[in-house]
Figure 1 (tube, rainbow, N blue to C red):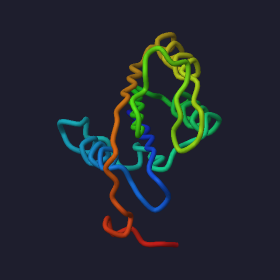
Figure 2 (tube, one colour):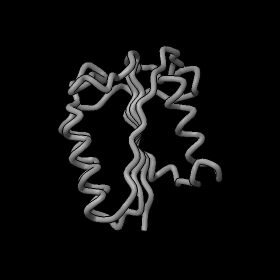
Figure 3 (cartoon, helix red, strand yellow):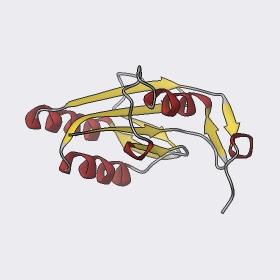
Length: 131
């Protein structure tokens, strides 16, 4: 059975959020669950609701043991709000709740973490090559 992590950041183009990069690295350590890099799906500059759903569906349709959804925005995501924005895209919290409920029905762990970061690192500084 597989473990997956989906990391959604809110960085401008050609940048990454410091915390999303730290989470990616942490998840590969023993303390972070020893996830393979291929089981960590990263959207550093935001993701549309439709694409997030497609990604969650793909993960759920495999023999999944757990999914971690890490959402890091520039502003806090408030409990009282029905949605939040990431990369200019609106994500309804009801969509995430649907997948949490689906995970309970199927019998695997689905954890959602909301975080905030305003520190950005350029992809050039990280050594990413432009294509």
